[in-house]
Structure formats: C-alpha cells, structure tokens
Length: 270
Image (cartoon, rainbow, N blue to C red; front, side, top):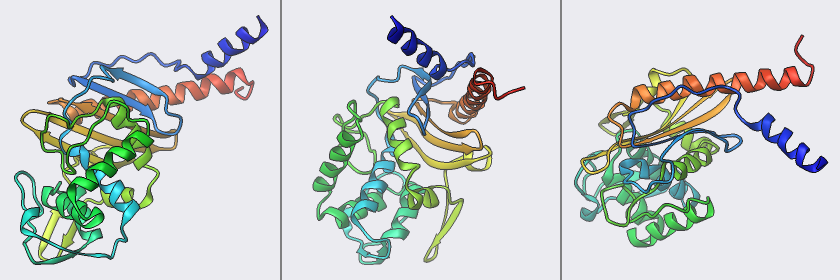
C-alpha cells in the first residue's frame, strides 16, 4: 500500500497542474517538453500522416552523422527534382554545409538528393539510414521513402514521432545553428529561412516547415526559454503559425505553474 501511495504522489508531481485551453486547427498536433519527453498537449498524436519537408530534419541529422561540413559535393543532373529548390546546377561543387543551409532554410529538394547521394553513395541506401535512425529514436509510426518529403505511399510519420525527432535534433548544436539562421548566402544565392516563428516568437531556435498539396501545411518548431525547452508539431494545419504560438504560450505557462507548485510542496516558496 505504501508503494502505491508513493507512486501516486510521484505522478501528481509530474502531471501538469496547468489547465490547457487549446483548440488548434491541425489534424494532428503535439507539444512536448524536449528535456523530459513529457507530452503537454496532444491531438491525434499517433495518426500516420504525410509530413512533407519536415522530413528534412531527419535528412540533416543523418548527414551530420556521416559527413564533414567542408566535404565537397558534385551536383549531378539526377539531383534536379520538382518542388522547392536552392537552384543547384549540374556540375557545380558545393560543400556539405552550404547544402545543409539550402536544405533547412529554403527547403531545397535538390539539396536533399545531393546530400543523400554524397553521404551514402545512393539515395536508396541513405533512406535506409533514415529508417534505421527512426527506429533507434523510437519513432515506431514512421516510414521514410525519400530524403526530401515528396509524397509517397510509404512516406509518413506521426506528430508524436516528429516531436521525438525534434527533441533529439535540438541537442545537436550544428543542426540548431543552421536551422535557426535567418539568411545565408551560397555563392550568388541569397536564401531566407521559411520559418516565420524565428522572428515572431522569443526563444525560437527554428526547425522546419513543410508543404505539399496532399500533406497540407506541416510545421515542427522548437522554443527555448529560461523555463525550459519545448517542441511543437502540427500536421495538416492551415493556421500553423498561430497554433504554434498558442501552444508555446500554454506550454511555458504550464512549466511555470508546475515549478511553482513543486517549490511550494517542497517548502521553498514563502
């Protein structure tokens, strides 16, 4: 009996004391405490959905685990593909770091293919690495079919899985440095970050936007403040900028509320 009481007390301490009053437009959404893994808000968190270019978070992480930033990549004709682009040209040579800026700022599908090909020797092998990494991270509702996020039958994830990925990505300083950059130049290319939250939310350290007609708008973001670090994911959400701002407002209020309640229980407030 004593053990049961102890467990219940621990659960009460860990459970959020802040009452969430959220209503997001997303079909699927998750707000997670990146430091503890605690889910603060969820809506259809395990529904398998298309994720569009938020895929490129995993692409960048796998590249960073296999390549040096200053390695040279030769662009091939087969790297040219539909959709968003950093406008690479066959025959030019670009560093891995420059391609990562093109991948994460302007969401270059061409950069994704060039990086995958260079890292693994083939796009197919690279996709295998992506799926291996997903399994390692416990992303059990995820399947990758390509490194850029273009729609494919066996390319999907869940809001919960993408939150796990974002929390992991936030621990990589090189990834954070690149995805939080507002603008970057590669040769004569001037690229701007598609993530509007970088200049709308205090403490936003970026992550990744995405869109296809089938997926709708997808967004993974991360905000770090004195109260902690949170990650938010929305899938198929036409009002994602507003929804992420609302989730963070509620989330950090919840963290502050929990801290205050814990300190009061410990007798450290007076």
